[in-house]
Length: 611
Image 1 (cartoon, helix red, strand yellow):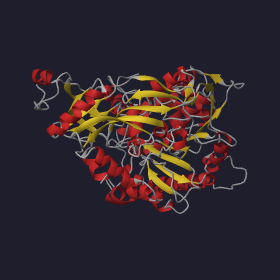
Image 2: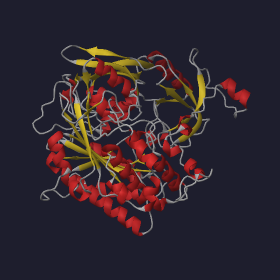
Image 3: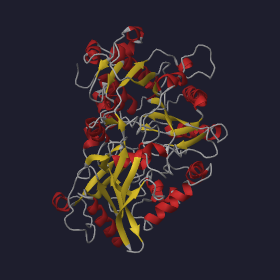
Image 4: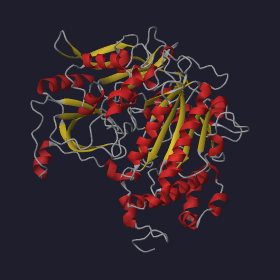
């Protein structure tokens, strides 16, 4: 094959390389560490070192880039505190010098909660890398109420492995393992789970966010009497704790204790045989195999619907103490290699898309579905019936490689092996995110409303020759925050959690989560995001259901930007967490301001949002 071509379809190697950032390769991992001495030696533009910096803590400059590469800041001053006391020392230093501190984990996030895109290298901002040293994990709690203690930089993969070693687990959690506990708590991270019909959760298991499992936490907070920042441990019953459980980066939690329950073996079954018209059908559609029906059966579902396709990838998890006949046993996470490691045909089309051939989005969606179907079931029927371009891309070598690891449609094993399934090597896409609070009996209505509007919008854009979405729609279903899960008397729900219950609607017991994924830089993605967001706000207006934003994702769209619409930022989002009565948005903001009146743990975007 010629050096500059990769297929008869005319996809060039140069175009393939243009997609490197989106493919999650080495470009994202090269993070540019530069010490002050190296800067002088290498001719890096000189910047004054942070003044009067505390001794014993190395400071260096490092590139910041988030998951999708949309937020990039060159060579900000960075350090890696070794202990919670180091974080405290840095907080008092920052207060004295007029600097701000930003916690930095694995950067697997989308929203500008750490720093904004283009933050100048000369800014008085210091990034604190929690992943180098603040990673300790140890058993906690009692035999009757087991728990795990972990520092902010501990990643979720290791935390769940530690729990499994104690015979413990979580009901659900975010799918990526490369997330720090500090980051997950900051945004109210979640997976997908509600009780199946007839299911009674074991003690320590719940259906809200990971933040809702916290029994105590330790944070750096301002002490007005001492006139300094101090380390303070707060029990879950402390009213201030409710504002710190989900704080959006407006605080620094250095350690937390999480309640856990007995580990549960799970069976995860995947299928791609149910059409969109049936899975997302209107409630009451005769004979339909609906998403809500699978929620009733198993309690744990996820639908991944590739753009311009008609059959989603549906995953269901069920509690299965013993290995079911026909299930494949697994004991480690990340069991979808066709998704974790970008197959060559996907890389080829990504390169073509990023080079400007955005009209290939329908082909890209169909290719992703075919590869998913091959990896799950090994069924070649749809490959043989597909168009010429897809058949050219799915060569015998590619098919053989996809089938080499066996089939993945029916897996069984300990909870963490089934709950964590996204590696850093997966496709790096941008995503919006919303949670719709509703009655469980309205789950199918919510799903039908959103998917119908999404499909109509996609068709309208396509008719105009525009393809703003080339990824997938992801749908998950969770319960709302129930403080009783943590087992601490007097516990309050996280005030800023997207799934905090509404006192005026006690019948709303469920949240349906929606994410729309697309490659960064796709033309029209912001306007499409705005169109869908405005539909969600208008449809789920608090009458039958209500919508809140998912903090880590994209929201507040304008025609050409994300996290930018002043009405969403100044009214809609705050009001979504004020509605219902009781403590909420205003109480959380007041508490965070009292615990950090100097805004050491903040940035300009958070100051605009949390005002």
